[in-house]
Length: 368
Image (cartoon, rainbow, N blue to C red; front, side, top):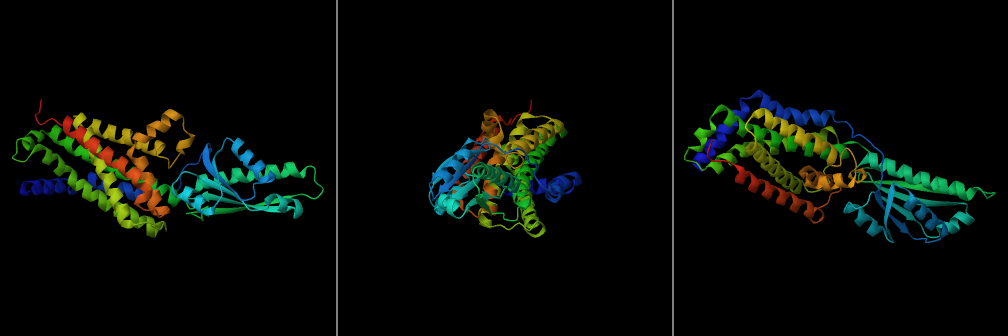
């Protein structure tokens, strides 16, 4: 362990004496959190919704059918209690809920007005706004249809309610995405380049013939980046809370644990890239282009995954940042615990173990 700690100290010296590395480690997260003001919006399609129909009358069924016929919505199920609606939101299965009060059609016929409650998951404010606008327009169209033959016009008043982000701020959407993007890029890039640098400079041979086990050498190069990435995470969380006024509604300990797991997964991916490349240029190209574009496009924080073609939807499942993005939103915004994110956690653990196994299998302890 004495030699192992010495190697870790050596790697810390390499990091702190290189200004470019320090800028990449700490400048990139701060810049992205500060400048990433809002997520790009796009047309919303195939969003899953539920209908809570206490009336179950002609008017409520007619509006439900119109919602189901619209390409923007997939009516997942019709449920009959507010508790079931809340559970559906917590699991992340739905984006919108429509609630018809009892005697909806009778109020419409006798009082010439009735109310409908529309509940949206505003952890993604752009999607929530678009979906509520779509639903409101469908209700307005139905109102115009039934008013065409009435002397006294009927009035349906939608009541909007935004869960988790009532002010529709952009931070609850882009902060988890930027966290996933920054941690993945920094960990993968730094780890892959640091090992390949040893190959280019010819010092890898010296390290391999040292008394320390070659695999411990590789781990010792990853440990500093793990600790610095955890520090990076703390900086991002502090900026999110105090600069962007985004509270952490869930357990901070659970969030740090899940983030540490994601950092380990990213470091494992960096180790794998380092075993497959022999130059810093190729390692940087694979790390930046191979991680940046998929994370931005296929994670779900810039473009809804349900809008994508099926092949791309399946492809998103192999991207670790997608699962981390879901975990961060569930903890920070929805305040959920491990029981809600155990599946995503197991997927990240499986990815980490697989990447470490392949990395050590591919690592050559003898130079050619």
